[in-house]
Image (tube, rainbow, N blue to C red; front, side, top):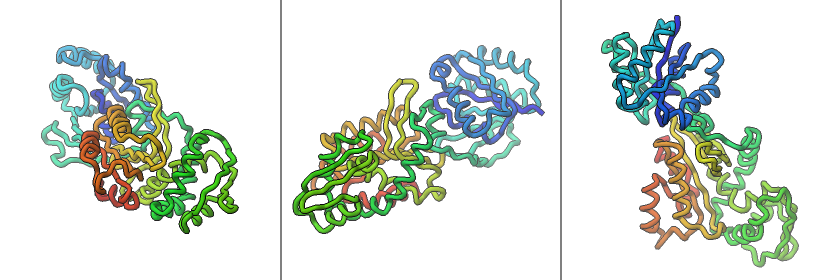
Length: 384
């Protein structure tokens, strides 16, 4: 039997990916438009399906229709169907324009086809036609990884998988140190700010020999000096540092702290998590760096981390960056901004302007006093 699955292409690519993965048809027919082809939305769906192992035994065809013409949709769809050997038809009505959905419904109901619709934010589909079909929603089992989600929106990582694995491995090896810093931050922040100020300009160096004097360290700071492997002679501190160590001391510790806090939920609430992704937006031709990204139930979440020693920190710049990323990724993106900087606070509360801007960009701010409970905040918001 030849099973043909019809998809209406739109900006929201994931419902079509979920439907194709569920039905596993022999042929996928994409009904698309000039605008969607310019945005490469069909290709983004196909590229994501490749990561899921679908392309070896599936055929893909596409027809471009006028998005506001029911007649054009009918003529072009009927023409291609006459050339195809079809034993079974399923149609995903979720995407496309309203006109395209109406046209597809009117045409395919005469074929007795199974039509499905995937509600936004749900991993299930309903079957509005035929009327005798399942009345209860059916579950969609697929859960996309971070890379698959990004691929679905035409975004490609510029970092090789082995480097991402190295970031992950280093973070997990340093998880106890990161946790210790988080627990003792108020007592070691003077040392971290001082180290950050001295090392920040060397973040891109492969190696660097650090030397400097830090006077009157507190007990916890002496402890941290030892844990970081710095040699101490009187007030003098020194060490031959790798790029990884420099980046860790100049803010990377907070990124790894957040990553490790969430990593414990991997497979038990969180589907995938990545650290240190650099992505290329092929549409814009730009690159963006991300601290932590994770997926849960086919939604993407961003975590932006800023430490106290990162100079000229402007909350507007951080939140505008998050907002821009949300526009690139589509509707289902929520963000967390984790910071050890007190400059967003007034009387130990978020400044009203900061709170308002965060709400505008669907961003939860985790202020200094709550950083240690970051994982609990995420778990509560996402009901993990």
